[in-house]
Image (tube, rainbow, N blue to C red; front, side, top):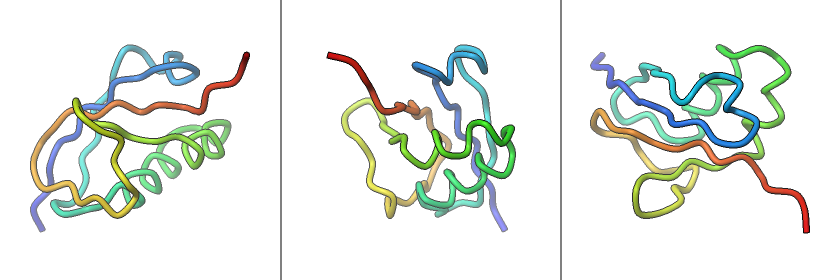
Length: 83
């Protein structure tokens, strides 16, 4: 099985993890599978935040069914609160 490397840029509460980090996923994994891998990898306090967050490339927010086919950089965007 081929794997690809995803660099994830961190924003909001995820900044505690640094500016970015790298994760490997199977080629053609989708965003939902990436979220599941992160939930299994990161400490439990991030699990609900990961579920509520979205991923984006440089142009758009990616739906959970979006397939990751090549090595790329994504941003993880937690929900925003405030007024």
